[in-house]
Amino acid sequence: MRDITPLWKKIRRPGDVVFTNKDGTITYKTRMSTRPSTQMAQTDDADTLVSYKRHPIEIIYRDYANDMKALANKARISLVKTKDLQYNSKAAKTYKNEVSSLNVKLNEALKNAIKEREANRRTESEMIKRKNLNPDMTKEEQKKIAQRLVTKYREELGSVPRSKRNINITDKEWEAIQAGAISNSKLESILKNANPDELRQRAMPKETPTISQAMITRMKTMRNSNFTLQEIADKFGISKSTVSSYIKD
Image (cartoon, rainbow, N blue to C red; front, side, top):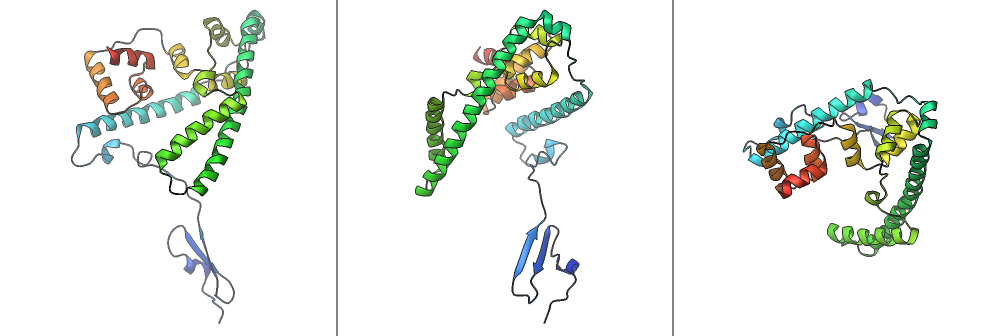
């Protein structure tokens, strides 16, 4: 007998919808599209994720997570309010040498990016083969093999990692950028391939930040808790090199 149950009654729970063929012998189950998320993305305050024991390191992570969330929101607002760079043809002529230099650096970075993608593609392909041959490999073993493979293919293709191919912008070139000597689209490409720490230094106000002993102590505590130099720098609004110097001292 044909199943005449209305389709809406076949919805078992939110997100699950079941279809059957005419004689009911085959059932098809489809799930509505979902997007992965994180607990931090779903809360407005990281304090809601702290355990009842409230360990000191949890409090540090809570403060850091809240600061990063607030910083991200501030950045989004700034992005919406920030106008695109206005191209200035006169400035392009005035800084023609700097514009030419930036174009050369960008072209080299883009050419290397193609090689880097190919090196990663070959690595992934080789890793699939090795996993099939040895499905019992641990994640640590896979990581070590992948690192060796990507190094091998980089050498074969003449590619270098991102850290070594970053565009380093000179003072004069930065002056040209500020004057509008290059288009906004080209600037975006340059910034994507530039040294992020250097960009932060140039974009931040020039006044020297005041670093208290309490801040230094917190930096060291965060470092001992496996925070990266970049994460600590973002937390205090200073450069990685500044963080490194205080931690070493």
